[in-house]
Length: 435
Image (cartoon, rainbow, N blue to C red; front, side):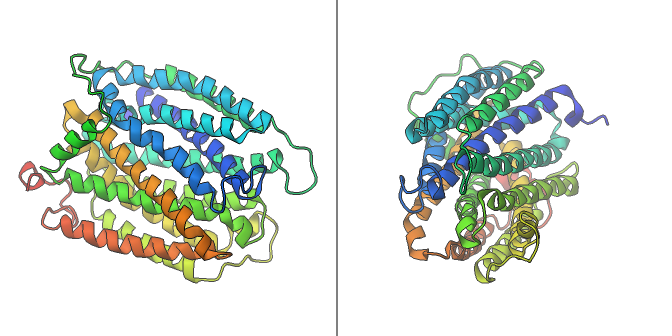
């Protein structure tokens, strides 16, 4: 009960992130369903959700370098309040886009929302070490990842139901105001949560501002390359390549299983629940240390469950709608993959925070954020290119995810050999880090 995880500052961050993640997934989810088989079906071509994904990720790549500098220069509380204030008018733009049925206005609101989120990322991860003790880092990351995925679940499930209401697949009156209204309400809740954040120390106001969006990344990568931190960042970011491809596949189960969008969103919800539970369990197992032995366990689980999703024929049990999807073998395999993901990402995320220098943590985490979204962008491009080749069996793309995870984890584990990271020694000492 004495843990900093129960104090106002961390709880404020937890709630702010919760509502932000919920809004991100509502707007992205509704847009994804609409370009697959909804109001804007075909307007972005086959596999159009990949284009939505690119719109979602590009701002993070371009702005995370600036965001890292902002997080290092100013109090992270001020950054949190600024982005949450901006989220409200952005949600209003989304309301206009959905109400008018204009795809491009709605995509513009998605871009603005991701710009806002890009500035939140480095401050969010950078303030965790300021709000909790080092011994609580793993549990703090496990908790925030768990709650983020609860938000993903709620946002994803809501996106399915909202999509059915906004663009009914059968008979019904479209509720054109509903998506935007929900986005505005959630944004207001996030702003209230941010206002409860405790005061945090101001950053280095004398920090020299670099207007080149790439030089920050180049300098940070150059510094990271002197330690094992660069390979930790790459291993962490690489996960998002696979997660991005998986997130494009799952909504297509509306076609694969011939189910409603609400039922397909159950699978996305299962994925969110699984990642949340996996992160929470990883945090509990780690306790007051960073338990790096969980990383290869998580990687192995991802390889196995992605392969099962691709190779086992998809089917539904003879049960009521929604229940049949939640109790299907597909949901079981997705749960296994999501749970494994929690074991993989929590130790790596904690290592990123712990190994980053205090005075450059925002810049380093901003670079890591850009790395993860670069991989997400690559995932969107890959999916858009390969999707037509898989015709009516997009679930077979999971096999590519399995192969990529096998190859990637083998490479990263080989590069991290001799550091003690993979055999249970926790965080390496400074001499090992700098080898």
